[in-house]
Image (cartoon, rainbow, N blue to C red; front, side):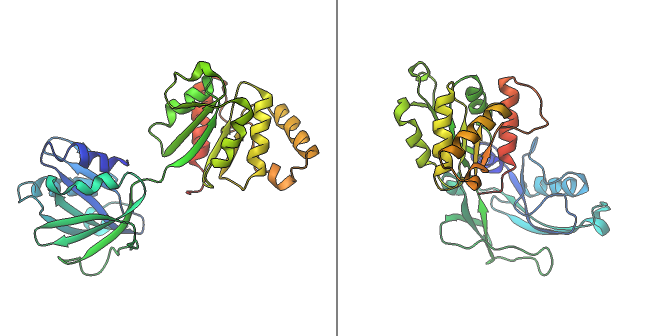
Length: 306
């Protein structure tokens, strides 16, 4: 779940909370539409960009906590003329006193969904929809009134990672991927790793079949203990329909040897070009498992959104 959903779920039922939402922004604004922060009497969770904009918005949020639950207001901020911020953009904010009894929709919002919010005289009614079309809002013009609805994408699409290998690097990747927008499918052939949570032990003759299951937006990471298995998996990944990323651990020499063998076995040049090896950001030095893991995950975060 993205942060603001977690804050709503965990904090708002326990103590009075106000949420600040950026409905729209234009020009050089510090954060974009959909950015949110949660405000309580004694704490701030998240940021809408800091500076005078956030200072004023937090004041409004704490003031609205004195009003009935469900109260809301819309406020426009021209950042240059009103707040003296050098960025000079314009932001439209929604500030609301959260009604903790109206949060059941959060359970449906962990994955990417469309959230429909309806402004009513007594509060904001929200629901998750699979059919609504997201609508961009304007930071100019008349402020929205009761009866206005918004539809926006919320939650977070998690890119599947098909991770082959449960050794030191594989474990480091799994460990660091936990709080990132990834969904892990993890495989190894060695029964010794069956005690590690999340690892599926697959017999060596069958492991390449797992590659075919990866969705089109997947990243396939190959880092087993055995070059023969690595090659088997690499060939399977390049023979199937393209995925977002195919990465192979190892040196440039290993890549060259695999490439030559793939060529001999008839894998076309455009398919072989989809292989990234070595994995990780090139300028990040270090062979420690955590360094390789963080570098590789950073590389995957740079992929175009699925």
